[in-house]
Length: 436
Image (cartoon, rainbow, N blue to C red; front, side, top):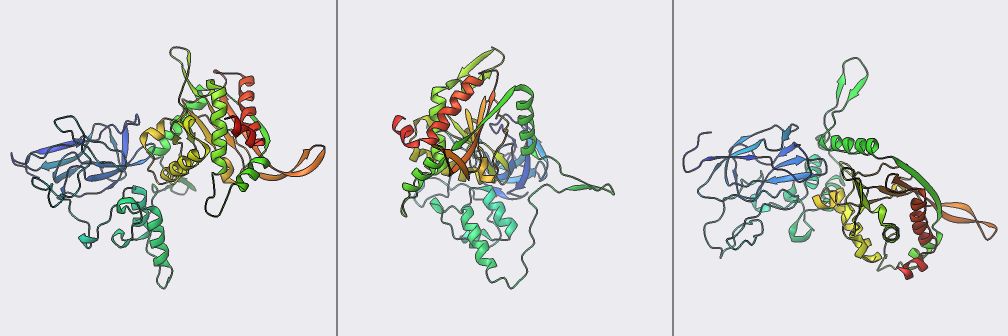
């Protein structure tokens, strides 16, 4: 497309997405050649190792070229889009976190929020508006999560017809699920065709093989786990724990109006207490300087199975939280992580990982340490089992706790001491909470 001196072509290159990656995969273009775009408008959805990210445009103008097809990987620093800019429109900063636009700086160094449609009393000409999607432009809805948008697209749901219940009119995953259920309830017609959300599988002719290319997320997971196995001399210890008292205490605090903290919140509280007593486990190993670096803040990582795979976002500053606050933080974090909305900081800040693999109805696991952390603690499902109490065999609620640690930073005595702090708290939670 030709340009004039008043509308020079500006090339926007894929920025560093803050995860130490060298490339990202183009999942879906949100604009097409010829579309008018505004500063901070989302232009493309890309997949990184940890999340789906909507990349906003730092320029306003008309789209001239899209660099990279959907499904292709684009290297950081390579051209992403070329835009014929309009007038003297300034560029944004290129902030690419999900749910955030770019920001601009005023002369006094203060940042303004991402641009929205101009208010009636706004000063100056309004920013160019993006081309509205097909359908009634007056019914456009706000969707922050790309996973919610994908769910609607794959289910054939028009977002313009979805009732938003999220804050500030944002369409949530639950909104789309309700729309799907309402549409399918009568079910007189055949369901719409569903667009595959995974990379197409290529089959070797006549060989009986099926090959699925690793996407960017799986590549990063594979690299991280391989590094952990290659570098960390890990050891695993486990113990069966009687969780009956914890189960009973939790049930006794529940009311119809307030369900109270979940079991995972109590486990998190006890893990934090154990890490305070054994800070060497809330650490990283500086191999270049041959030093163990203990960390004052406990950013408690939680293994979460999302639609894209396993992620480990962290509850930041868990050491400052009560059980109730931990419960609220855990519920919020895991919900956002499943939708791909955990922040880059939450996804990379973890200093220790708690894994509730009992939610998958399994009893034990020899987990892999989340490098560069030095330990991971996991719990299996809680089962009614025969247990000896005061010489009598009685049914008790038993869970298996397994602990994997880096043998370079501590020995079995430290690992066992930490485990007993957590196990003893589970078996006598009332006393443990009084002493916290």
